Image 1 (cartoon, rainbow, N blue to C red):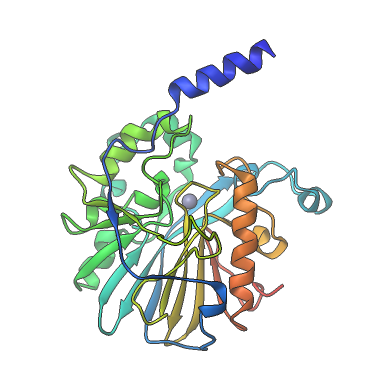
Image 2 (image 1 turned 120 degrees about the vertical axis):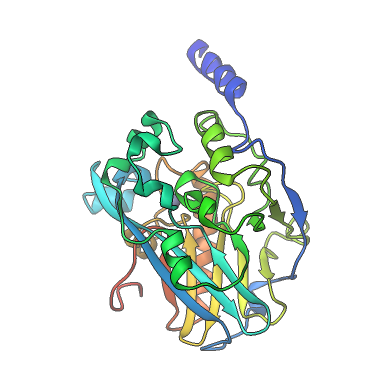
Length: 313
Ligand SMILES: [Zn+2]
């Protein structure tokens, strides 16, 4: 009991927000419910998924290996092959947005010069990181204007590419993503501040109806239901997922509400990497409901890609 009290006090003393940069509220789009998401099989968005790097994660962070389904499947601690992605969302009228930021050119340098500490680099298995394409390399080959970058969440591996993006680009995160306090943030706040840049134009999306009615957690971003932003708290407070109605079909980007294909297929949340597993489970259940609205939807987990039709339960 004493130990528990001491730990609680210690955690609350060191709890802090993920960044000390201040975010403004960003109001865009309309709140809609699951019954209003539409049933189209394609849409106007040009969608691209860019594989940025091959990497590994700790399985007990990526998947709750204590979940009965994981125990039954014999999942144990170990390394799991994963990747880092970012996505482009190009609307014919409203321009190009990025989802997540990739990895910047600075990670081509010697690891000693990376803007993250050695301890965090080691905890995050960065010695395994094999970059395929930096954000700058991709931008040089695709020199289009980018309106803003939307973050699935603000963990380091999703903001590593921001310094390669045009200066002053709006960075849009989910509700309370930048202000919610969590004890592990004490270890990363300085690095998050650096990676977001000097005086970033940081915003949190407004989900105006969600507080009154938690099912209204879907934002019709462009107002034509082509791009839906879904608030999925749990992995972090402001975690976001996205439905993209593209010329090539409907896509669901789960963010790190499910890092892995196994987690998605078995409806098992991430493990230690999630701040609140119970909320993460509720959000994952909600994403399953969203996916069931669109037969043939292509699901993109946070750090793994399905091949063939493996994503269908
Ligand atoms: Zn991640």
